[in-house]
Image (cartoon, rainbow, N blue to C red; front, side, top):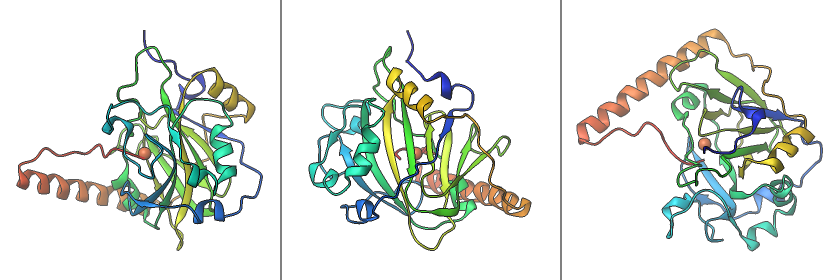
Length: 257
Ligand SMILES: [Fe+2]
């Protein structure tokens, strides 16, 4: 039967929507309760919706009973602080799974390449239902930062680098594309991440905000690109050696967020 997927995401695995044009009070993300949850760098997360409405970030499949990344339970204490963010996550009308704000400390392009991962949004997702993809709404004005997308984690060919000013809105099939952010600022980056179920509602939302499956690539100096690639390979090798020494299987596909 197969999953219901968005035609808009078929070509590249992502779409860039119109920029969000309104101001939001930073209290909506700064005043939330964050939990330490390391994912793709030095991160914390503030959930707005979680598996059971508690302030935690675990994949829904790790709860009892295990389930896929749908039907997130809104956390009243958090949504009361972030009404605009909650509204934005609800606007498409698509089923919402996990919904949270990521706080990412500054890092480098090399860190980002090492952090590239695929999400596990569709674990336990029943065949014939909508494929879970993710919305990324950048909240802070991270003018020098960018999202990196690759079809193959270690192959720079076709790498996409999308700028992350305040208001940037992306929808990404994060189970298909390897992804991570390069955040070059001096302050943390905040971004709203929402798991949405693909279907007619999400398609209409992408159309309404003129989603396009391409973006202007952020320019990065060739020596930085090359050094990042070398550093990714070096850290991958160190990681592999570490796990080999421990006699454990290496886990390259870091899950979550
Ligand atoms: Fe992710």
